[in-house]
Amino acid sequence: MVRTEFWEDPKVVEELTPEDKYFFLYLLTNSKTKQIGIYQITKKQMAFDTGYSIESINALLDRFINHHKLVVYNDKTREIAIKNWGKYNFNRGGKPIIDCVNSELQQVKDKKLILFVGRKVEKQEIRKIYEWYGDTGNDTGNDTSNKKRKSSKSSNDTGSHDTYNDTSTTGGQEQQQEEEKEEEKEEEKEEEKEEEKEEEKEKQQEVNALTMFWDKNGFGEDNYFAKETLLSFENEFDFDDFDEMAFKAMNIACEADKRNIGYLRGILKNWNKQGIKNLQQLEEQASKQSYKQQDKKPHDPSMDQYTKLLG
Image 1 (spheres, rainbow, N blue to C red):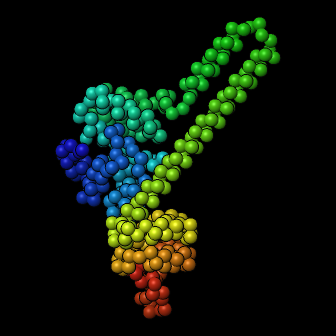
Image 2 (image 1 turned 135 degrees about the vertical axis):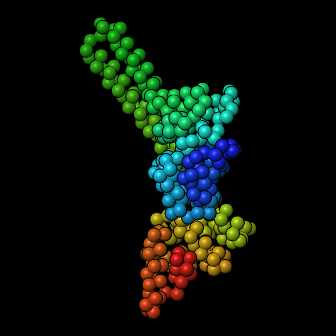
Image 3 (image 1 turned 180 degrees about the vertical axis):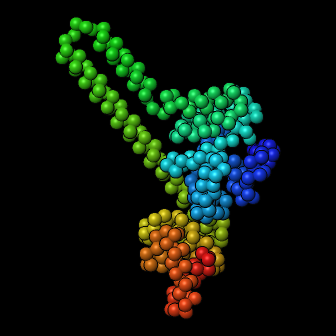
């Protein structure tokens, strides 16, 4: 929920364009949002939800990050933080809210985002929680404090047995170092597992986005075989970003009113044959085709539809 004060914010009223306001409201209210103003979302998901292209999403994010300075986006963790979240939320406190904030802040990967949002939280009791989790020294996602305790205990044990000779002391230190190395290896394995889970989750979201676009745009909601075939094209064709190109192909098919898997395959195959691997190369090819047409030179008719859409 967004409070009515949103529309009275001077920055919103005076600096944001209608497009900015729409995008800002989306960032505040989409299905991925959390209670803390920090959440994970991919740019592809933003594009799918808003109807914008990936390029438009990149441009909007750049404007909000560098010009308006209202959000921060971590490309590595896919986390976004909304600076003034505390102004439009946290009008109520209490134990349920505090418990929820505690739980969600623990899951944030980029701790710098916590401080970015926390500075604008007006409720003191909630701001203190942000400050605690934003302090990297209080990172609950690692065992640094445990290691320190173990190291301290080991040092005390060594100091209490002065009768041991140097050899046994050295041996104890080596054993401690080995244990710490093993712990670090275990932590690295756990981090790798978490990253794999996140990648799998993101991939599933991308698959869902493609099939949802298929269903909502008349390609045949019950045609499961065709949808499976579409997803299999990722292994058949060589693109920098298959989902990006698949979305573009489906948009072209809708424009041409040829919503079938054969037409989609033809588009993707034609792009691959011409060495087109991303949207930038596709736009460049369309521009060249348009120039050739103006010169009345022979051209590839199969690019006409793409030139029309990209122009």
